[in-house]
Image (tube, rainbow, N blue to C red; front, side, top):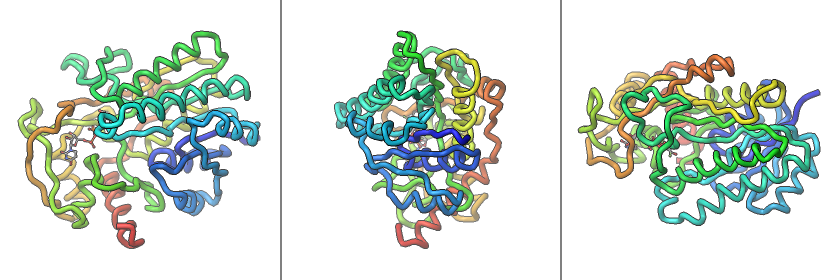
Length: 345
Ligand code: UFG
């Protein structure tokens, strides 16, 4: 019997790639999304890739009754992967209550409903943002590195949600969780049938690079070249979204089918860092396309350098990110070209 998984935010960037990997691994998927930052057409892309159109419910998870109706309609749901959340750092500073309501209430509603509807496990999308800027002796950062005070309401919702999960499970709720702390997810499915849908001027590096390469943006600004790193630009652990999606499949199998601690934490990255400048030059080499860029001042709130020690995920989940960076960047470019072909941008 196929197991049924509820994927919240399943039409979003990471959610859609994870839905594809879940279907290909033999799961039934029910997607819940309020389409606040994604398009219904994403389902067409998922269907073209997998041959299966996942069940879809347009529901806002802040609405507990509407959320409950999903569990009533699909009583076979055994596990949840909870992606649905607002994720723009700057916007969260402008609209903190919107972020707390959306990101925290949604999780609480799901957790409350899980025992009632026999849902055993939840995979939570957390972020390396919980570590802040690790001390040099803590790089690469492991799961046991100290957490630092969040620099934005968005980051704080990740920290708060991790604590809510821990407290609820330790109250004897009878459910389990795996918390995945993502580093920087990038790229798109190799078919270019799904990818990251840009919404206005991108905040994140890769969409800015691909849009500049396409001529949609005039020039990329690399924020700061006086950091304490080999080339002076910031360092991140860029992980391919398809590799990241596969980590969720491994985590779901573990939380549902293995005897494990009630809450487990995994860093999900590649284990190594690349500078912003390296990303731009690798993109140019991988695609043969020049990117118009300049150095500009540092961006407020940026972390200088972080990359993950992902040994725990490698050994315990039996998962490893293994797609070469050049291929990942080429996939992002292929996706941008597809958006142009389709007249999206
Ligand atoms: N960058 C530029 N120019 C740009 C955009 C980004 O130089 O136009 C640089 C940034 O300064 C940073 C790097 O590229 O050094 C990566 O920036 P992103 O915005 O792509 O990613 P961040 O690491 O800043 O943010 C990510 C997630 C957030 C999360 C944060 C936690 O996107 O959701 O990690 O550290 F909160």
